[in-house]
Picture 1: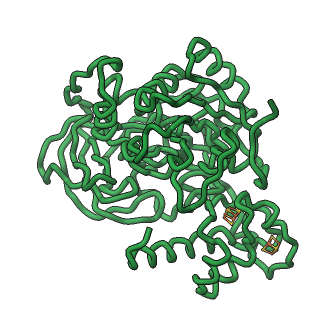
Picture 2: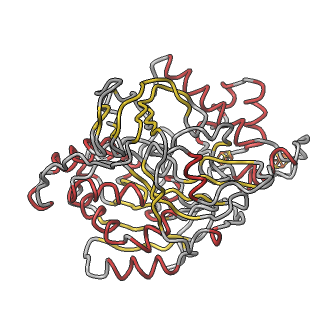
Length: 442
Ligand code: SF4
Ligand code: SF4
């Protein structure tokens, strides 16, 4: 079989050599830990603690604010100092619980867990919900919602997204090398929910060692296979992944379950294992800190709520003259203007650069070269979409299928005129979605 892939896309320098050989190490937290109540898509979580309360590591400090929501757990023991507005790595602001770390790491007792074979599908989904798991790849969609499609019997493919196509990111790669049993174990948990489904671990072909390890680890598993994907950005975007592995297509109005698929990222599947098999809530995640702007790139097991500045220090600190820090990777991440923010459930990486390519290359007029059209994996016309967006003409933007944009950034990457296409289109999508919500549509 040829390598699985999709149309369009780009091949940016991936910078993975900076951190791919760095084993996951713990990042000891310091100072206050901050837990935003909105670390997920959906209703904010509701605090269960108040100022002055003592909390333990692994204690639930905020409960889900609705079905599409997720609880939040303390990742250290200490005292609740405040519940106040705080910034997040992606530039947002919202209420957060601030815990003063007492340095003791005293843990809340774990619940008793049943063997997987004795758990009902509802009990498994409830355990995932209770653990506060959301899409750790960056989307932050509550995982128990994904695991509860309208027609579970129609799900025939459960995909573990190990593509990690975003440049510089290597946290999933390290998980594949160091914790394959959790990936397989988490996938087996998901397959217990979907009896008819096969499990696919999807890895790009630039990670041969990970492919070898996972193939060996699932050799005896009758329902699990490794699928090797062509290395191309954005191969890990949900729609591209589903198309590459199953040949099925979906658009912005559909969910993966509409085409019989459930997709979860590598770290999320490990968290499912921890929750269901070990009874552990989500209190830490693996974060890559990389780029030419940081002294010692690496992959860190980071307690959620740890200050980004502390995480950067664990990676040797920013180099003199570092100009840009991004929450996430360079293609889909968010430029950071304040490092005094906490790592959240969806912080997969912090990338740091000595140069700010955007600032150093001012944008000029479109020369109609068509490169953005060739690069767009959704077959869109980014040059035109950005023009409609800039004019505020959302109606034409939608007519030209602007809502189908997956915000991959390929168009901006290839544009010789350095036009901020993806950013402008992303803003227009946000405005159009807000307008739809106001009108009561999806
Ligand atoms: S228009 Fe959207 S989907 Fe197409 S290349 Fe640009 S960011 Fe990616
Ligand atoms: S790549 Fe840039 S210059 Fe070329 S058509 Fe698209 S917007 Fe215009």
